[in-house]
Image 1 (cartoon, helix red, strand yellow):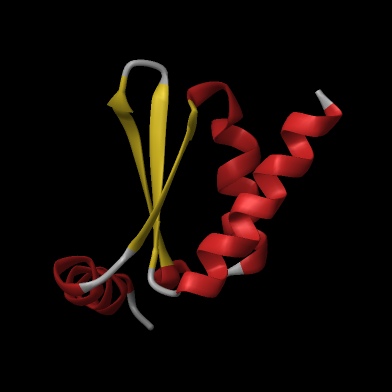
Image 2 (cartoon, helix red, strand yellow):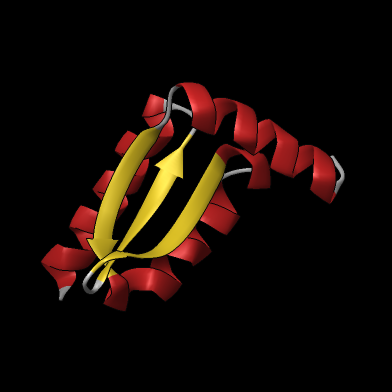
Amino acid sequence: MTPIEIAEYKQKWMRSKFYPVTLHSDLRTEAKEWCKNQLHKCQWNYTQFTDVYEDTVYFEHKQDQENFSLFLKKIRNNA
């Protein structure tokens, strides 16, 4: 997919149904790295500073949201 096709595809699913996960902004690097390694660019969207010290990742699929949440849980347990 070209960058414009990716953007248009994301806009479609972001308008209808998506699955968000909020996280502390300190985990930004790890979160983005996980998304880049596990998913296609068109399957997730990262928004910084959705609240104070909080970022939000939006997923197209429920299963991706669940897998990401498990990843965050592992990080928190190891900290």
